[in-house]
Image 1 (cartoon, rainbow over the protein chains, first blue to last red):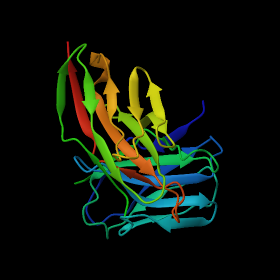
Image 2 (image 1 turned 180 degrees about the horizontal axis):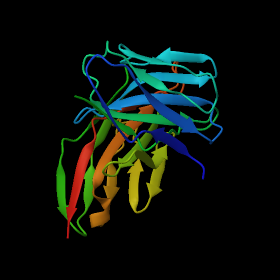
Image 3 (image 1 turned 45 degrees about the vertical axis):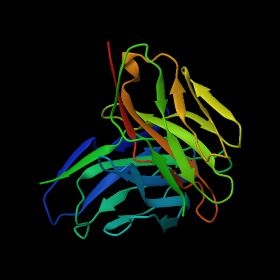
Image 4 (image 1 turned 45 degrees about the horizontal axis):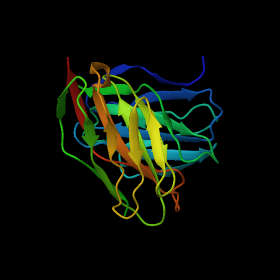
Length: 113
Length: 114
């Protein structure tokens, strides 16, 4: 079954804790992205990676960190420095050379208690 | 910088009504334009796209035409169904120095009643 998987679907965290969201893909796409979705604000880019062992900050990177040790995986860590982490987090992939089309995973809903 | 503006929602229609969701953009160069759809509790799915001026994207009865002169990419459907109820996002991609970065509008909630 090909595609993008994100886990867990729902995640609860206490204030002050770090938490890591998983994103795995078997599409063999080069680029991967993390977005945050809040009601009425559309999606905002957190981090993106075009190749393994390289990544760049997006528009709202503060309080987040990522790694890209494997082509298939792009985990996102939400740190305690993120002031308002409750949101829906979406991972996306893109094949270098395609006409800018990104494909999205099902998302993880993070709630800080 | 690049930006996308969508019409304010939510939009509520009866089944078989005509749908228009307006989208305008600001960008340098020649961006690609997209409409994505999000069903409740799910990720985004690409609905249609257009990569150059005057191109028309279409899928599942939805259409949108890339209008460079009015910097618009309005989404239309002639006869909506209850199953079209979702959130619709207009987006643009302009490579520049940020490869493939998508800029999204705020989303428009569509509810279709039987």
